[in-house]
Length: 44
Image 1 (cartoon, rainbow, N blue to C red):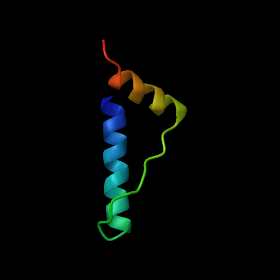
Image 2 (cartoon, helix red, strand yellow):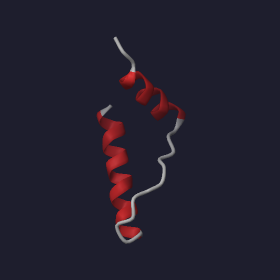
Image 3 (cartoon, rainbow, N blue to C red):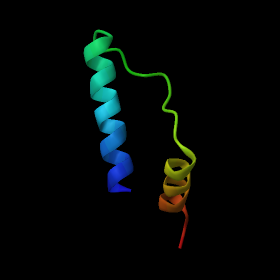
């Protein structure tokens, strides 16, 4: 999950710098990132 968090944070910062501090409307995950996200949200 740490890698996903860091990549999303980096993408958000790059978007802010390029678009006058506007937040991105969505994040697009690769299939591997999506799987990691779903696994991190699953209840044990």
